[in-house]
Length: 402
Ligand code: EZ4
Ligand code: CO
Image (tube, rainbow, N blue to C red):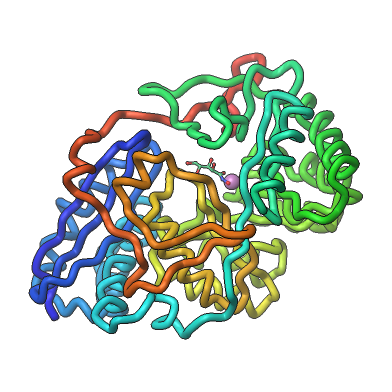
């Protein structure tokens, strides 16, 4: 079965998504997600101008060889644009192989390791009480794990607090919105949030929190210590990850579990954190870490150090990524948890999918492939709209991490 056509589809049913569609000479097609939030068109060009021609005529079943061809063969290895492009090709080819085999993708990966995939939902509010009421709502919906983020007194905005309760969308403007950040105010506030949540709900649910790269290593250590009594499932991205040695410092001081890796794109980014056991959950997912083929390598390395997976699942990853990730999660022996934010209704219509939520878990579905497709006619109704993530500045104007 040979690759006959390679097509890139851009659609914006509420937010931008880039989808790669590969069709074979036998009429089977597969799709992959290539969305890189705020830099979408760079991946579109990479795929259209530099990858598509190299794929036509190749054996669609040679997934590993095509992965190596695109990785080794471009000379300029790694990076988010390259790896998102490779990830989309890889996901589409696994989709095709599983469809051709008549199997759901998880069967092809080695079969089912669990009945369902535990997910965490996103509770947020302008203050602690609003966030607490949102946590109550997720518990009523059946979630067993909930991420909690709250507005901080004295700060106009902070990461993770959405205007629209269920649908969080930070890429909100055609030029980046500028937010003002205060580490002092944040560090003072977060322990109060989790104190309230444990007081109200007890310890029967997993609670998570995303620091979103804002702190220095010592500040992160201090936050970790101050959250220990609340037994978080994880504290995510406490400090920027370029300097992985920072995690040695954090680790020396706190037993609050750490989750890192949503912006990583290869196993090389993960290697030291995994082999030195500096984190507890690895956040890489299908789209930004080179597809199913490469994500498996990362998960296998993590497993050697008892580190579990916690795939990124924000809404800037399309339902195609979610579908593929759920098959991966269903297989991965060292699966930990899957992030789950609801896509808007128009997005779900553009990407009809098999996966279903029930009792705090997502189920990948049993149809052949990864179980997600794209309605191209509908997709064409939503043209690309420029949208950027915000930036952060300190009160005196200094640029900070968002
Ligand atoms: O801000 O994916 O844990 N989830 C996150 C996300 C990221 C977005 C950036 O595009 O940190 O909400
Ligand atoms: Co995050």
